[in-house]
Image (cartoon, rainbow, N blue to C red):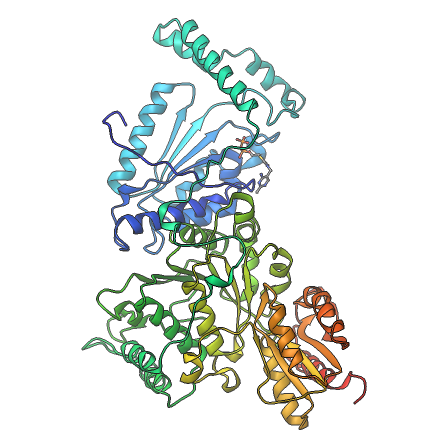
Length: 630
Ligand SMILES: Cc1ncc(C[n+]2csc(CCOP(=O)(O)OP(=O)(O)O)c2C)c(N)n1
């Protein structure tokens, strides 16, 4: 700076999808602020200033900005304000402002909040500088967003191939005859700019020539030092980490998790829950998903992994399964046991998010980009709502490392399962994630038990390999005895990508399934008193655990056929992905391969609970009867 101070400038990689980067930039700023505060969630917001530049059409039109602005002042998301600069050329590609927004100004969206908007003539550089100073001062003083609406014009077309005289002939006639800004400004301040212009032009030409001679793209990106302990790219065996926790440690964490401060009034239902959790952690009751998650988080926090978990109604949990934030029944004060495990523990942020998907997921992705040592999770209320965040998944989460060599370890928790709740609440669209999976760009898992969920969460944090993790989480199985675990399961060393069948040996038929339907198949098998069918759970779908599947098949040397069973329709779920891959494994062993699934369907599930039940019954029955040789 003019005062000899250094300012670091971080550019946020920006996909073509306009405005998608907005929440990512803010999430990154939040992570940096937390880091500069020594891992504290109370920080000096003036250490980092997010500046986001927008086009006028994009600012007015893209909903993700509205989502981002909405959380600007929320405790869970605040960064002490973002400076929003609209580079307002009064045109969007070929589209005029009257076709772009109903409001007088593109900037008017910001009026929904107490955010100052400065409209400034871009042809008046002194005014622009002054407004820039006011905006920065305002943000620094009041910790608020500020909008600078820089109103000017576009001299040429949107791109080389766009001739604006076709779409705006009168406007571009005037622009053609309008002097460039440098000339206007030089005249206004009474300076002969000829020499300066020549010097700038010459410098520009030299740099252009140099750039044209480059043989390779220069390597500009450099990950900050806090990434040095973490790996990206393909997985290597040496990244593996043990995930088991001793029974004594689990008991100790349990005691801390069920403790509340003196005088805290617990809701009677929560008293019961805490009693049950105490029993779970001391081996007197089966551990359900909710508590397995708490134990995973608790153990990681005590090992030094910071935690940030957000989503709609996430503090309690949509399915009443989490209760991570306890509410005093009289004062409504809150208490977070996970944030009070030990005085020296790292930060533990568990927040209810506003009702947004794209904005909130973008923020968490951004946070994960600058806090690789933290476990950063975003939860969808129901998995299908994740489609509102598709742009973040497509542009950043699945492709960010390939496009920009920028890793992330963000975790998505997506409730999934066909339970008769209809087309809107059944599917987290497993097929979409599997279609995006390539080059080990992410991990896609559906843990079949509480213990598997525990190990998977711990694995994500403990491996020094940072990859997005997409988790298909249960709903009805959350407290189901079949999917519950015991303390001993949590002491095991690893997450199992394939869960072998421990009940049936030397099976003739092997069913492979993922998620809830696997448990239903087991119940069906019991009902049928079938002893010749093994059921394998594919808990990790991507990267596909080929050696583990092969080993699980080889455990049944007399098997004749393998059946892939899914409850999703044929055009959804893992069918298209699993079948060709299983074919190879199965053929190598001289086995036949079949599949059982719902018929292709335009909507994920039927709207009738009765029809669902009937379909599910048929599905389970087909899994045991369509095979040859029975
Ligand atoms: C989400 C999204 N939709 C459409 C486009 C295609 N597109 C690229 S630029 C543009 C016009 C943008 O106008 P404006 O926001 O005013 O910015 P300007 O290009 O004028 O600076 C459009 C529609 C895009 N890049 N992203």
